[in-house]
Length: 276
Length: 287
Image (cartoon, rainbow over all chains, first blue to last red; front, side, top):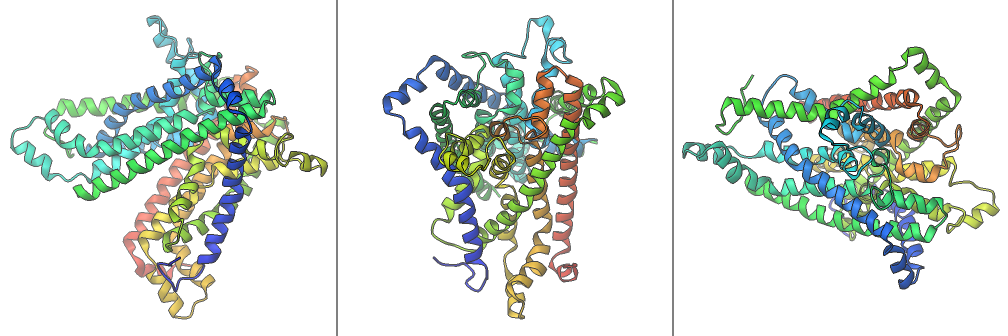
């Protein structure tokens, strides 16, 4: 162990406190989850995970999260572009509002979105004449996850876009390139890692999301039932091993995503240093 | 109005982009917020006041405030310790420590509640022992506090650690050389340097603590007047089709979310201002 500032006090105290807290609050309970799931035999695990209902829940959770993140990607890029590159009245207010999904409790978002998108809601009434009914369908889940995920894309892209050096764009302009050619060849390539980071963050958040989804989803088994809800149902039936098994699977997915996001963030940082 | 940094796009394209931006933010963010306040006001002020002063509603508000009042200070102390350890020292396992600290943000809120049910629930690891000693954690307030501690764990460290790292420790070392005790150094040098980031972290921690739904829902047991927090009370009212009351409570939380965003902007502005004034003014700050 080497301290970077050997003279600085509090190393043992702060590290001890941190490790104690993380072990008690995070590592022990998570280990308990995995051990509980591992108490099942491989045959039992397969039987529990390979039910049509569980498989469908995984498909719904991962599918809607992916769709929502992909839906947010171009919108997030547009918002990040306008908010960093243009000056217009109300810009600061709109920029602050981007953080709303981070600050608004998920249950509030859930009932608000449901009320908006039911057939006689403000937006549902506009869509109903076209035969589109989003609430209480898997599309409703995508609506909720798109709300929750939007700030991840915008906030990942914004700082990189703001730091982009102008000389390449100006050179391209001088050489007669059109705006779309500049966007595609000069702007987007250095933005790629940030865009992918935002995409992964939105996806990861969407996979585990619960509060904003359960109100609008309709929660029909095998159609619009997400994995977190299935965990809650297993718990209510006192099927602790089954809940632990689904929970461990979600935990494994979270760990993989965390690893991927870490990589992407490092790539984003490296790209920024390289460009600036 | 259009004094901006474009890439030679015509003015109509810029206008289109801004109109698109305003439209997306209106439909995706402003309308959900607007519907909360509209629905809350749907049955008039008297109904709203009655719904919010109903004993179960008051109990839910009190419980949410209690949970936040316990969780925010504890996670602030922990967050400061973690930030101090990871930003100023190099040690084996530092990367792993940082990764574990991020875990609560990565796992599903439902899993965050589930792990405590498996720990302390009746069929859980410690369940029989707790039952024998008549200690209630799950379906009681301690479980709600525990799962909220878990989901809000990274907020303070996340705000403070990058700042501590970038500001360095020159002033701290100077204070120590001049004979300050470690505690004096922390209180008079470190704390003033990081206070705006610290307050931002505490603010975000509080917003999540008051608003957490999934994790708390799993451990609470939904006992009215006893283990219902504000978000859980919203769910119950909504499922009973008592929409105006549900949105009344939701409006309180939405107002808290707006206040959080506004305060955060103010704190960031203060932070930039104090950075701009530089370290010269630091010594004159009240300790």
